[in-house]
Length: 192
Image (cartoon, rainbow, N blue to C red; front, side, top):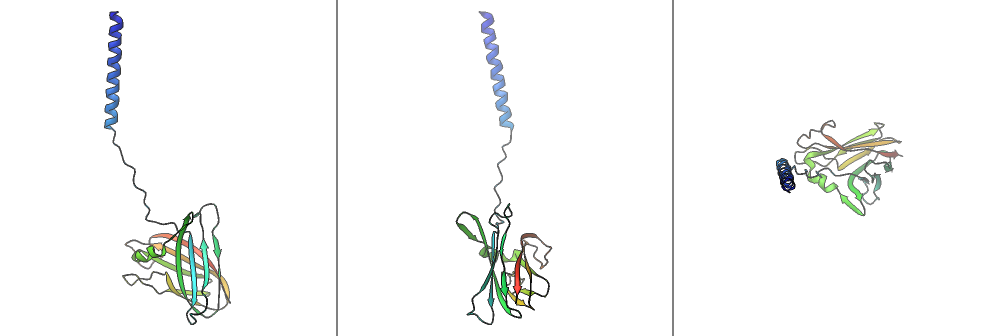
């Protein structure tokens, strides 16, 4: 009976030591909280291009569009090109949306306007003589933004208008190589 009693005491003592050291080890571990998700950059799923004839405000706007609802996923983006008249000046207005949430379109245009000192759109025509785009809106430092622009068509032809939105927090310098790229798309254009 003494042996059984002492074995029981040793057994409980061993369990107690093990339990206390296990608790001590857990107390020594540092709990590192998860970092909050950074939602500063929005997903741009839709870009709408509205071309309004500057000499005829009653003419209907010509609207083109880029749409990629899965944000670079397996589905290819869908482009709706535009047909513009040759040798005309249009007022180009861009609207950007995040339509990745079912039934909820989030307008990103206003956010870009609020952060205008950190954003700039760059435009490039292919071929070069098809259309010339010059931003008309400015940020607080008198640098171009590009949500609004004059778009001047040249001779008849077809090609693409490349649009790049750069995010340049604290580094905006009018250079397309500065900062991160938020969008890089090419709108099909026909000039007749």
